[in-house]
Image (cartoon, rainbow, N blue to C red; front, side):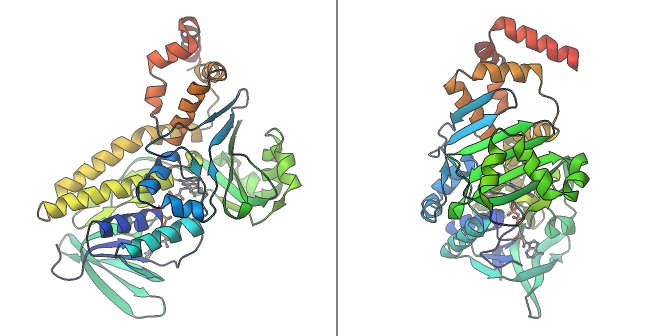
Length: 415
Ligand SMILES: Cc1cc2nc3c(=O)[nH]c(=O)nc-3n(C[C@H](O)[C@H](O)[C@H](O)COP(=O)(O)OP(=O)(O)OC[C@H]3O[C@@H](n4cnc5c(N)ncnc54)[C@H](O)[C@@H]3O)c2cc1C
């Protein structure tokens, strides 16, 4: 541990950084968390917190605060696959049974407050310019409070929770792997006067739409499209967005009957990559260490999970006498094992490939089996691995032997 300074400095204080700092503070470590932003403030992100992420908020004692701030739960989910419509509920998972979609203005500030309550020193409006090293080891950061002069702070560990364009990751040259370029773009805005009972998803050729209730009586409607369609979409954002919703049953009409409450947000910047998340004196968490296309809405839950995994590793290292390398190698292994299947599913959905025969048959078979629909929603939320859902025994049970052989053969022929 550092003889002076902090045990840990966390660069970036949104969902990954504030959660990591809070958990470290609760375990008794001396923590400084900084962010160039001030809170509350928004960031370019929709904000479905999937059931596993909600379970973590519950475990951390923060879900009640989120609900008390007027964040509506979404329990009833309707998934329109373009052929079959599936309606169900998320299966309960570690004390949570709903998705919440809190505005980032609320969620990030709530986590920053919780970090402060855990004894973390949080400096808002603080820009980190560079890392400080002692030979090959990172030992601190150099930066400045807005309007102030240069400041140097030292720590035993510097955590980069500074997002997908992480300065920390770049400075330590953290290698990326399983990297894939963006294959989608995202566009979203908020509507008033558009009632939704729960969550709605629509799959259409080259488009995915998600609609959820959020704070202040607003509804967020999110459109993802093929990256190749981005120039045409950008040329007429409102027209393209609304015509996409018009292709989703009565959604377009319901949205047009309401009022747009905020500007459109549009981005093609949705990369996919794992980065090696640790090295001498440094670690990465959140998008800095693992970023995936937002089409599955997993980033916030990933950040919460990896905050827990990293903090466990750091505390293990501290209790083991301050030699972090083995413990942090365990962090990487656990993160990659936990995130890998959803990363693959996300890339698959983001490819907008045509629906396979086995999927069409599965959706048709699911329709009249409410418990199986709930299990499938559990897969989409990240609570149940797709491998378990698509295990031969489960497919056999859902489809029956003849249909399973027929669709498997059709898929093989189409490859
Ligand atoms: C269009 C879109 C939609 C999305 N929708 C969802 C969704 O519905 N559900 C979901 O779970 N995820 C979603 N995501 C992903 C989610 O936004 C991210 O996974 C999440 O924000 C990552 O959190 P983070 O804390 O790692 O990084 P960020 O939220 O990016 O925070 C990083 C922080 O670091 C600070 N920082 C950076 N550099 C410095 C520096 N040098 N000095 C000081 N501070 C610094 C920044 O100011 C920032 O506040 C979406 C993403 C996009 C782009």
